[in-house]
Image (cartoon, rainbow, N blue to C red; front, side, top):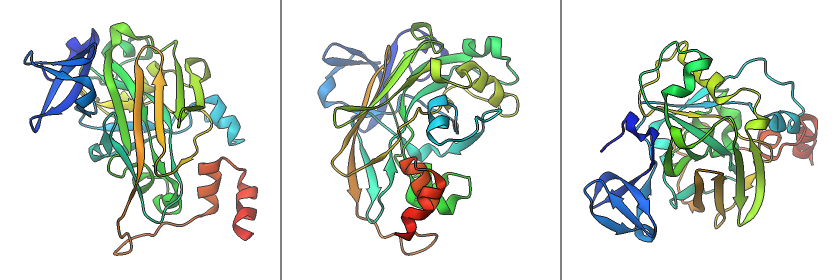
Length: 289
């Protein structure tokens, strides 16, 4: 099967089976692979249900998050790129490097492009989508001081983008009417959706493809609502979108030595401002205590 625009209909998963990457579909408590073979769903090793050439993410795009930061609403969306190595799957671990503290969840709707897209207008943008899935745009804000806007260390580390479990075809999901919820250890910690978006999914796609050619499989992360907060090792975080499903991951501590080279983790005022959503002046006072 592989990735193709025919995925606009149906629900597809991507799993690791016999050391190979294969596509399939969930049927009850089994996954039917493209070969026709069946495997127990509970034993499946999920991969992100995408095969992109690039991953784009938007900064502030939910009203609730803008209000939480007491910021001025952006006139237009702004974006950053995430490396392909950030991709992660359903039920896989999120690794927090030893010695860091501010590993935040961000529940999001991910859009997967279905065909070559360049210079497409807002009115036609959604017709170029293959499907949608749940995303957790994880951020390690101990490196907030170091990235200078690139978000590479904060958002681009290995495994910092779980997607899944399924890619739901564009014909089966309406991005103009959805609700997203994030749960931490079973407690709902984020809720938002299409009514809270400053910039619609179609607008974001049209904006990006004015200047950047989007190819089949490319991913656009459409932003997160208010109340992104840090996770701890042992926590389970889940992102649920009505009509798509629930993406689940657990946090583990990663015993890694970061001191060999480069900027080191630190708690800056910007770390506290973003990770805990405290006002900037209060963040400065917190550092002085």
